[in-house]
Length: 308
Picture 1: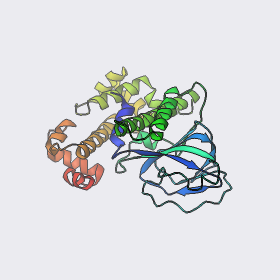
Picture 2 (picture 1 turned 180 degrees about the horizontal axis):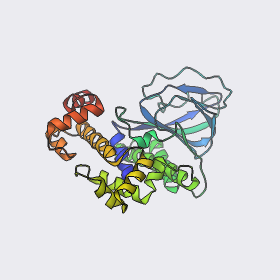
Picture 3 (picture 1 turned 90 degrees about the vertical axis):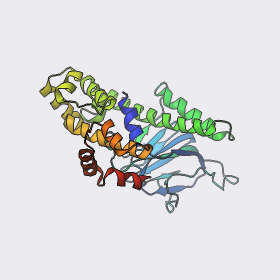
Picture 4 (picture 1 turned 60 degrees about the vertical axis):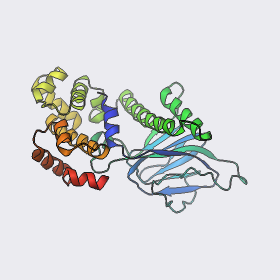
């Protein structure tokens, strides 16, 4: 089981969207916080990303800026340009329409902008472990798969609607998200910045093996000893290592992931609550309902009606 793919699949809701955006100087737009992960990718020209905290970030051709928690931010041709009012779009990102003044002014920047809707009721700690803004500057020979996905997405958005366009765009957006996260974790590993947390966990052979076991079969009645065997560590050594990197004991994380998996099944399938309970390791629907309510604040049936 690929843990990163599993986490992204559980967190995502609805359909991602994107658009090609062109802006001419001077421009400065601030975007409010939203329940989605947003991205800005520079195709041509330059601009500045203005985080809600911290210094402005210069963006050049090929640069990727990813906001995993939809934090408030701005985009501007220069940090000193006065900021206009936030947009009224629900997503808080550009709607893809070209700047109406392009006939009078040459473009300053051409970008791909988009968003992924996320389940805000129980965000995965992997996503919470990410910074407010991930900046992946372009580097020759680095993250070639990310660059290829960006190029394909740009070509598809520039083309008139063709057969298969909707599916291709959704697939490319899914790939883009995974490539962004993969690139970030790889950058952190190479730089050696993270001694704990999910960056370290995904690259730790022992803990990663236990995570793959949990994600691969969340309904199994795992014990700490069995997970330690997957990690090829003693029970005590494994429990210490897992808790140090993940921030939760192994069985606490297992229960949390079971409920997260159940929530995804409630959102995306018509399976009976009893069936879902069995899939995530509960022979008693009553016990499952109690555990689910403790994590999500409402019983499974109510949760399904609300998200549906």
